Image (cartoon, rainbow, N blue to C red; front, top):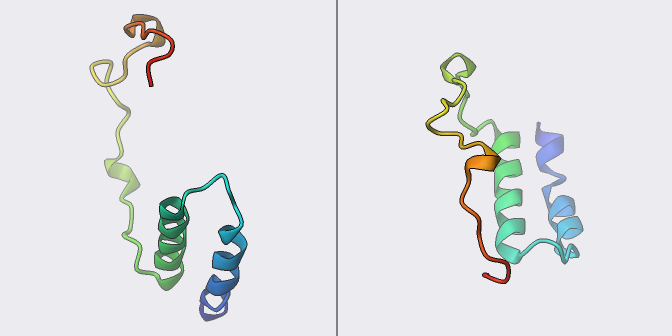
Length: 71
């Protein structure tokens, strides 16, 4: 992992030129990669992950229409 964390400045430099991402998004991405590489990321207990119910997931055809042009 140490070798990978040493490459973080290169990753930051590579993402600095991406116009598709805001400064906030780039910073968040670098932060997440850094946490992952340092082992600081929280362990996910996959057994606790459940499929969302129909009350949470709304089918597309049941969603309300939104007028075009609203930003």
